[in-house]
Amino acid sequence: MSSPKDMKSPPPFRGMMPIMPTAITPSGELDEPSQRKLVQYCLQCGACAVGHFGFASEFHKISDRQRTRLIELIVNEVAGRAPVFIGVAAPANHIAVEYALEAERLGADMIMAAIPYVTVPDSEGVYTYYRELSDAVSLPIIVQDIGLSSSILTAEFLLKMFTEIEHIDYVKAEGTNFLAKTADLLSLSDGRVPVIGGAGGKHLIHMLRAGVTSFMTGTEALDIHAAVVAAYLAGDEDKAADIYFQQLLPYFMFYNDHSNELLKAMLHRRGVMDCPDVIPPRAPGRMTDIEAREFEWILKRIGFDKKWPDIP
Image (cartoon, rainbow, N blue to C red; front, side):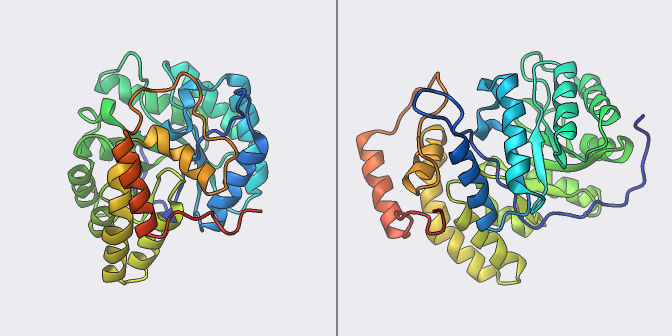
């Protein structure tokens, strides 16, 4: 059973922790060769951990049969070269627990858990949810703070769960006001709660300056994100800022508005994924002609219009 723990901090990750999309064929089946290429691409970019079943993975469109196969494939392809974290977000506590147990059984190293997303629990229900997950598995838990949970998962509440629930070891910050909440949480805990940046890389440089050392983003621009983080962690803030403001931010201005469309499209363009399709149904709001034209201009300006060189 979960019980109060000391405030010894787990080791923070340093670098990129990409959440992969789910590769499919034009007919909608899992594209296992492309999924394996995605894993290799992440590792080649120096990922310090590799994850799946986040929002970027379209987790809510994936069947239980497909979940099992994807976990098996990813754990096998990573082959111990980096930790694997698996998202367990679900509509109900018991489903999330089942997902967590399966992830542990199939060899995952961590789980990432957002709160139930249909009926949103109150603070007592949220605490119970994370305690049940911790009681069920022995894996470290990453608390994923999303928009639905932002008002409940205050810095004080996150610190309470980190202190009292055995396997809660990390917080992924991407809900409302995540930059300010991150600063508060790091201050309240004297830096003992490792915070992982999210939101696709939004405020990346500012999160680094606040003390964050690792980030979960999509995979399409992993090499650029990684270059910012590596430069900063090596002590070269000016180089990190130059890459961020000159390459990443102009790209992100378009990507942030059209991530559903561009995540797989960019990986396809770079030769990492064979098919750019999302899992049906497709969300509305595709890029306009002028946005597409200006996006192409940005890609050429930052030298990001070429294939990834190391994928066979």
